Length: 141
Image (cartoon, rainbow, N blue to C red; front, top):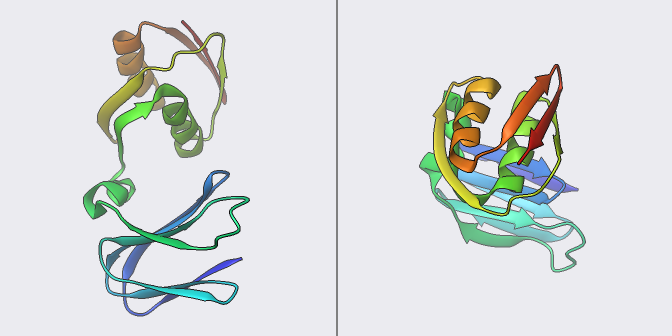
């Protein structure tokens, strides 16, 4: 397990299949995994990848982009389409089915928009059709 101890702060914790990231916007935190302890200052993040035996690693991040979710904003900067769909699945609680693949990268900022509005914009840019059936979304290029 990864433990984060807040020491008067604002931070973002992200845990998905691709790993755990703790990003610090304000204050100070200690992030602990087993016997390794990292102290983070604003603009720093600790991360651990699945099946990575080297433990925690420390890096930098852009606080203004990482905490956009608090304002209902989703931001993508040169992200592969597949990663965008994974983020939308988490954000909107849907499951995507892709009939064919597209490896292009996409950038965009969406501000409190519905899933349909986001897909409408992406489909116009990437030339695909989509169909939303409750919690299932089919995409076909």
